[in-house]
Length: 323
Image 1: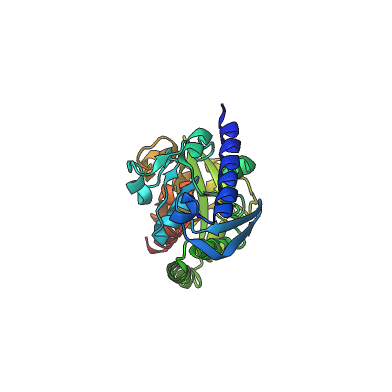
Image 2: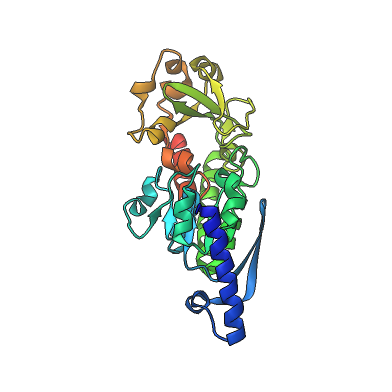
């Protein structure tokens, strides 16, 4: 029996159990162990509407951003993909109480089904599996735009914090985390406000570069944090606009932020200036003035849309002005 048939059987059995227990005026084991909500929580998101009837007890997260949200709120979860776990969530990598659900982009459905979760949290990276996942458990989609974060990036993060705070009865903690994020944003804006430096954000991947402009995955760096762009090139793809060293040399940024994707994908140390340097790059003001920042790839690439990641990203941005 495949997992879909198993899922249907479990749903049918669970529904029957609820009906029978209703006739007998006895709560089921699931209801007995969970806090029934006096007012069910309705979460509307881009993929649909999710109604939560009881306080979730067995939550599975399918993205590292969601894992960080729950970690920051002090909420335990029973499963997560463990293919690319950022260093700030490393405590869960070998935690046997947290099941390994496979890959972030292609989670293992059999393992998810076997876990018997009562809530699933996903992002756009798992959006294609949404309908299938809803057959296993109520599923909430995190409405974050990974292609173009120019608008509403931090607002989306705070909104998701508040939503999860309501679901898990962590409203106060959610408000505190949102306030901390606002403080970090304001700290960066105060630093960038009167500065004339222009910057590039580029992705390094096995010796090749991609640029991320004002309408890109890292658009929030320019739009929300006040960093002035060294290039007006527009690109909204997930992995940026392929560029050459000549492109960087002509843009001549005062500050160069380098996201080392290879370090994440190959699980190795981040590159340094000596390893990536070439005659064209050495001609830029950023290289000449020592303002090349090799950012935290886990925060910028693996996550980039959660409370911990944003604190690290903002610190990396500020570092470019302090070198």
